Image (cartoon, rainbow, N blue to C red; front, side, top):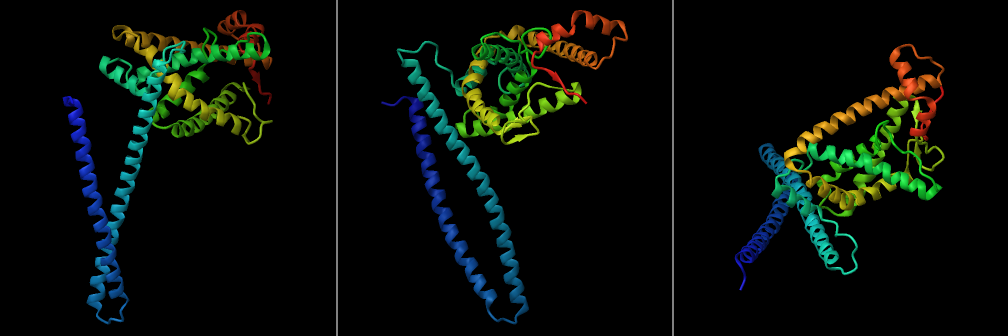
Length: 341
């Protein structure tokens, strides 16, 4: 015996199938009728008729039909896009649900299986979490966590590659780097709508979004501070040395890994922040990051002036020179170099 939910699902699927078959039959019949009607009118129009009123009647009718068919074509294109999107999401959700079930039952797993984005959506809505969806609060926490994790991961990578730790921070206070934070926000913001779609969309979105973010970060760093932190001029298929094809492909791969693996886990962490303090804590950390960013910009700007041989002209600049001399700045930002005019 089927329970009520299964019965409703069965009857809904049966109803959809019936309606689809009926509409499909009607559309095929309509296509035949339109083709026959239009061809007949073409034949009439092609006759050597001298009846001006008859010609006008035919041309007016054909123009009306052309507009109707154009409108129908646009509607079918929208429907095609919508139905393709829905079908792709259905297949993706089924695939990810099966994968989660498989990982949950595995006897050899070390960590809990990665939750699917569909599971995250359900949990956020059920809990009515302050940072559910693709809102400001969610994106700020993605930015904050991304700024921190990016630094940790790159420092570990540097240690594995070079055998020693090296600073990869982008701010003077704390292990944070705005490039990773903004990159995380950009990937989350633009790929969010594709979170339950196949990996093709995640790769394409990551490829484009990551390349744009990397280019803009390099451009504005050089424009504002006269410095660069990376240069791909020696790499093939590069654009002004700011981005290159290889790293854009890496951004595409990261897009898949981000929205399917990293973002769901990050969303789980954010879900653990209590609703009572969530918004207040968000504002406090936002103020900290703004002050930290402004202070870092001022200190780096003063560093660039020292490199250019400009002496401190006021008490603030002298204080900066005292607490953040060149040696300390080179330790904080070891890869930052100034572009000489």
